[in-house]
Image (cartoon, rainbow, N blue to C red; front, top):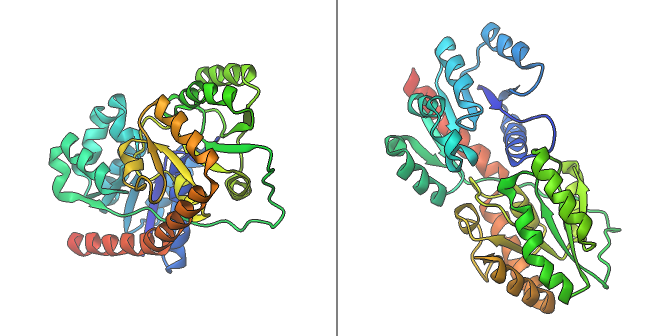
Length: 338
């Protein structure tokens, strides 16, 4: 089978969308399929689209209803092949993107839509009632990292890792603001923020905050293959996103490495984390501080829950299962199309 994957973000700082598309492409290829990865933000975009006209794939799969949906829809109509779209986050939660006429056209004309979890599926069908009959949940996969034995975890500090590209939806300013009182109380607390800038105005705000808070370190863009070493060196993994369109790749990766995770109580995170069993969810800034304080003081609790989370993630979110479910879906679409 030959599938074209339309990825809206391949340049610049790493996003979850990039990580997901690359993972899916890799495991579809390992299953014996031919994959055309179409980078919509690359100078190669026109050449890649032209190649599809010369040698058409069997079907098209766009990742993001607004950023990938319109071109996926247009190319599918030109080629006469089916297409599907995966909802990835801002296409559901950002009103400007969600309500755009091009988004609605792409969703309405898609043969099938997918998302990563059932809570997001419920929100999607409430928002777009007409898609309910063609929305399929395919759980996200996660890949693990090989970590060198030299990974350091100094005993005189408590390191919180926040992997997040710098843009407002990631809530990095929220995390800094609400952890600041705890950092004043507990001088061993450190916050590492790993991610490049996707919004220069917002990045300026974060840089000013970090400059005033010596316990905050901006690590900048970290290549994805090097993130495992950061996970290994951290004591706690933090998520502060205003919304998640599925299960955050960074949370899944940290859990797969038996790292304790503390995440904002939003639908995408709720669908992954069972509070107190596979991680922790916080409701507001006070809750964030209180739970962080408790976790700093109870390493045995951190370790026991983190190992439960590891077993859960490794058994429920394998990339092989993700690719297998997608292949079943692709085959059913092609069978119905012919």
